Image (cartoon, rainbow, N blue to C red; front, side):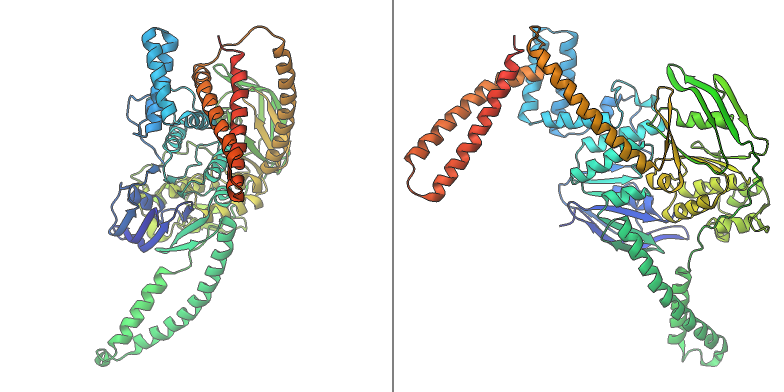
Length: 629
């Protein structure tokens, strides 16, 4: 039975039809991605499913009594809440038990009175009752992996990226049976994205997600839904399978479209010649013509983004950084960084969130000043800087007015010129959209418009800070092709590993302590190198730990048990006593058993399991008894 069923869902905004009579379902264990062009209605569909918007027709049905969690692109939190309160807000019994335990522990550490000791013991008993120790461990892993540490911080003081990570942690902690997410990888660094992928697969999470992260689609998703020309297509497989089957479908549809166009031409000729007096006799044929005309109008092949702008000439001197140092408060971003850029270099910037990647780009482009050192920019260099902040697009302006503010014409690579309107068409803004107000554009359409204003300046040194957020797969693919053909210098900050792998030949790895490591190769190459290094470090750490443990056996100074360990130690004696009694009973049964072979095997198997469990409990008791007071 489906966790979620969508039946004949239809939605339009004014004259713009988003989707018509679409139907699909999601079963337990399926991880389904929804992909489409910008503005096709992906986020609207998720809002309808979550109850934040209303469909014009159709049904949204969840299976009875299932827990569903939603992650919006722009999550909202109650003003004045702490991070802790925002995370633990549900009625989940395990959440309540862990929340009570954490509060009781904090109070006991502040004031270890008899009353607080009793409250802590009661809270620990609740955790034990709900078998929530593993849940607590899982919560801590989620918070650590998403870099959420200051639980008493007010949510009002968090940045947009921190709020998105907080919202993601909240829905994961809720452990829903169905998770619905809109662009979950935005604002996550590359390590976090890889952890999230492993989390979804390892925990077999049922998922409906809107994302343009192609590695995420390939590594996580079992099904892909494509919303195209008001219709929904389903592909049973990952991104690689989707690309293959989509190409087959479009090839078959193009052949069908050619046949339909020929029929359309014949019908059009007939309708134009048809004597008016005989119109009533041929009404069925006219109706058929009108239906065919409507069908073809809805299936016109959309013109793909084509970029071939003229690039300013690049001279011998490009960009030099000499002993550049930069700090923000106590955070050291660059410490004496030296680098001389060469023509045609393609560099990816990587590092965890907060290490200063955007600051590094701002220093290069002169938007921020270095604390010391020199930055020499060649006279012929024209920067094209696509920043995360972007430009303030005025909502009361029309699309074509935004472009005309930059220029009425733009020179192309082949020597020709394009008008603002023609250029907009190449960027998937057809004439009917060019006079649309900016306020009516989707997030991805605004990003595409901003990108166009950057390329109109004919840069020879492109700097792109998270350019892939909110762009659809078609725009991404064509932008990548343009950048592959781009002859100037290129610097990219992106959480999109597919994008980075395709375009960057070398990486600057910002470590967070002022050091910039240079790695020659793709991002995937770097991750493989890093994993091998981590394995080696882990092995070395294991050897050191073994030595420390040997030394610890001769050390008479005992550490104290944690409260959780004390609780465990006190209960171990009871568990051991119970297992020993159970073992004695099984031995007696075995001695008195009949010749029934199956019964003997069953008792022997149970005795083996009980003996193993008893040995483990006794070993654990011995370990803890070393530190018990």
